[in-house]
Image (cartoon, rainbow, N blue to C red; front, side):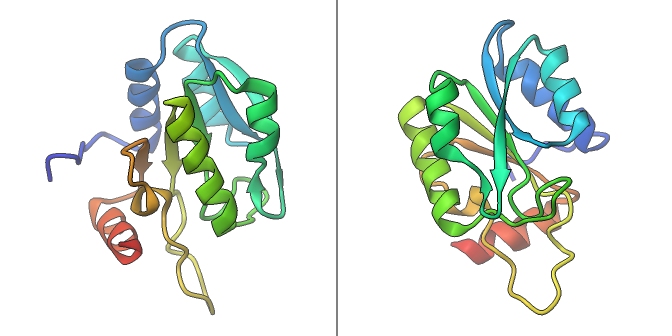
Length: 153
């Protein structure tokens, strides 16, 4: 309960997180293509956005580390990438978490529609896999967050 913040919506949460964690000029990774609302929140916080390509496994962490290893923050939609719809593979999730740990960077996990999975089990959220406390989970409800992250533990 001490890690839950209730805001007026996911966009409000993204804006608040970006303003709290970023100083103007800090570098941030963003999925390419990606969610325009996240781009707006990053720009409003003064971030220098580095677009990182998405393929069939999600954001390409290796390319991100090469292009902008000094990033302070990463914004991802790992359960159902926006707009392509691909889920981030477990190896990519683990690579992103390892990179974030080593870079001392924050990861914003926007879990905007993870509940819409049919025929397969839910993929563990990044927050539930994170042992270093680098992931900030943005979800539609506290119940959703608890259910998804608890199932990964």
